[in-house]
Every structure is written in C-alpha cells, then in structure tokens.
Image (cartoon, rainbow over all chains, first blue to last red; front, side):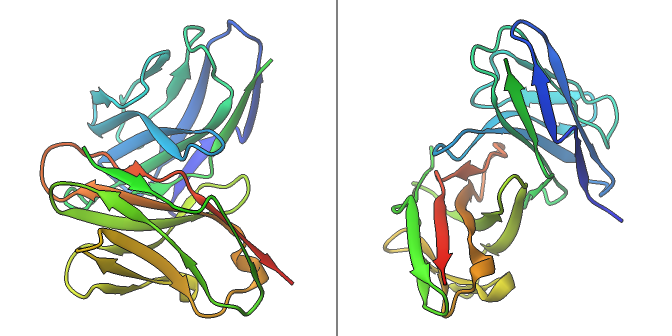
Length: 113
Length: 115
C-alpha cells in the first residue's frame, strides 16, 4: 500500500528541546517537502529536497533543519531556535518535475509546553 | 512572485445546495492551479488541478473548477453538497516555468454543510 507516512501523529515537547518529525514515502518520488500550517494562514514551506543529499530552504526555514540521506525519508528537526514551534506539520512528495503535483502525508501536530 | 487569495474564510451552506469557493491568483506569468481538501487533523488531498487545455476541470467527489485567465480566477464549485463535504479547502498555484518548485497556498476556506 503506497503512500506517505508521518509519525507520530501528536507530539509534545518541553520548551528548549529539539524534536525530530519523521516523514517516509514509498511512492518512489524524487522530491519531498515540509510545510507548517497555522490557523488562518494556510501552508508555508519550510524546506524542500529535489534529490538525495540536496535540499533548499523555503520561506520559513529559520529554526528548522532537515536531511535527505535516503530517497524515501526526509526528517525535519525543530530546534530550540524556532521561536514558536507549536503547529501542524505536513510532509509532501512529488514525482512530476513539470507540474509538481504534490501528495501529502497525514501530518504531525507538535505542541511545545 | 505569485500569490493566492481565497476571498471567503468561512462558507456555510445547507445540504444539497450548490456552493462556490472563490480563488483568485496574482502572477505575471502562466501558472498551474490546484485545489486541495483537508479534513480535521488530516493531511491535504488533491481535489483537482488545471495544467492546460479545457478551462473546466472536473475532480473527485463531484467538484469542478473553472480557470478564467482574464479574471485570474479558479473558483471551485459543486452543484449539491453533502454533510461529508464539510472540510477546509485550499487553492494553490505554481509557476509553469522556472526552477522554483514552490506551491503557493491560499489561506483556506472552511466549508460547513448544515443539515
């Protein structure tokens, strides 16, 4: 059963701690993306990766880091430098280099206490 | 840079009534256009997309959208809604050329279908 998985679905962390969100896809997609969603603001791009071992900053990369060591995996680390990390985080992937139709995972809701 | 405006943040409608969710975009070059739906605490699901050709695009769940280049709009419509259509809907655009691979999303429209 192909798709994009994100784990965990809910995550709680104390302020000042780094936390890593998992994103895995078995769709053989080249490109992967991380978005942050806040109420009333739509989705904002954090990072994206077009190929293994390469990634680019999106619009709100500060306080986040990523790695792309394997085609199927694109973990996101929310560092203590991110001033307001509580949000819903969505991972997506695409294989279509022209239209870039993106397919999304179920999301991880991060709450920093 | 491109931008997307979803004119209504909330749209309440009675079951079996028609609905239109409005989306306008701003871009100096041609774009691809997308509509996504998001159910509570879930990811986004692609409803439909306009790439080229016919300006009327049909998607899943009985939704359709019409691309209007002169008005830079891509409104989403459904002739008769169901309770299960209650969700948030996002319009998104991407430039057809250039190396940037970013989708730009609107802020979303919450559709609430009332019994």
